[in-house]
Image 1 (tube, rainbow, N blue to C red):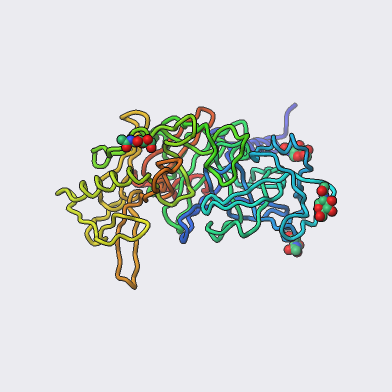
Image 2: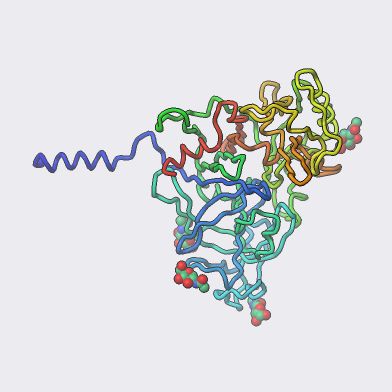
Length: 456
Ligand SMILES: *[C@@H]1O[C@H](CO)[C@@H](O)[C@H](O)[C@H]1NC(C)=O
Ligand SMILES: *[C@@H]1O[C@H](CO)[C@@H](O)[C@H](O)[C@H]1NC(C)=O
Ligand SMILES: *[C@@H]1O[C@H](CO)[C@@H](O)[C@H](O)[C@H]1NC(C)=O
Ligand SMILES: *[C@@H]1O[C@H](CO)[C@@H](O)[C@H](O)[C@H]1NC(C)=O
């Protein structure tokens, strides 16, 4: 059948317009922000019907997501609770069986049917380590995609309710917790259970915006800020990879002990040594290995702490070596006599030169499973600026804090050390990837965000 020429042209034009560009794969993405007062991160999504934008504290270790929904004030036309069937409630992934009477919670839930018990859970705030009991809800959650106006829509997003009192200690803008942990109910697993792999870029300032990229094993890109608007850079060559380790014991992760949880939902990596300026910090090696019987030992990655936390003996050895290396002729730095808590080593800002990769101090290297697999921590990720005009303070403090002794996990890599790095969690292959600072390539999380949100 032949078409008249104008129609044929129109047809071709339409095919061109409608055909997706073969190289563009539509991925669910979401902006990440840094909260100025807590130094914790939030992820922006939309929830409820009609959809409303909301920010959730971005967590990497808790078992399930939760949102504030004090019954009477939860305004959505699409939510429902789940009638309690003991096996089904347990299978959902909230960590333990609990059936609750919906009349027990906060302000009355208008949808509560008192004669039916519903699935319940124990939402917890990982920052304050507070937990409550509340009911499980199902409602919609949407997030943007790289395909322009198309949203990635989850009609059956499953989470626990919580009272607003549980938000204490989290960013003021947050209405709940989104977990990207190793668990069935994690946000990424609810988004694409078939492709549980994602990458994150945490911004270093409340004025910049980072990004979470879901359902992708890479490549991951950044826009090149200086060149023409269409050019991009594949960040693959900057990644180093190390296995994600499983801690077999979840007990101690949370206030509530879940008897039937198989393993910890937190992310562990095999840190084998810490180096400062090429010299090893002397560390009791048994602290670096996860004990299979009680889950003690090892190194985890967490956004629940704004700075890395080191067990006391490691912290002492690390800060001593850092102070020694900083006093060498290359840096010639002397710490101030009264450091600002929670830090224990601070230098006068006027004594330190600042470069594009942050203050010029000895490089910290986290050596992962092999000698050549090194996560480099430059000044921008090792030092924290502390200012107080009233007291006339202007310092750079070493952003690794003392975690005391007998902690389940002796080393926690925290928020400061993740900033302006792209970190990848690939649960298909159980690998962790990290770029080290994008600043050393004259890039930042804003440039990664700019690639995935070109319209902003
Ligand atoms: C609930 O949301 C609807 C739709 O956005 C709005 O019209 C209504 O006023 C809201 N009700 C309350 C109690 O906030
Ligand atoms: C739930 O609590 C209400 C009020 O206390 C009570 O009337 C109802 O029987 C309870 N439901 C169940 C299934 O126990
Ligand atoms: C959501 O749940 C409803 C009711 O349980 C079910 O019919 C529907 O298939 C689910 N949708 C998805 C996308 O899982
Ligand atoms: C090393 O750490 C382990 C576990 O905390 C402890 O039992 C052992 O005594 C420590 N060894 C030394 C030499 O401090």
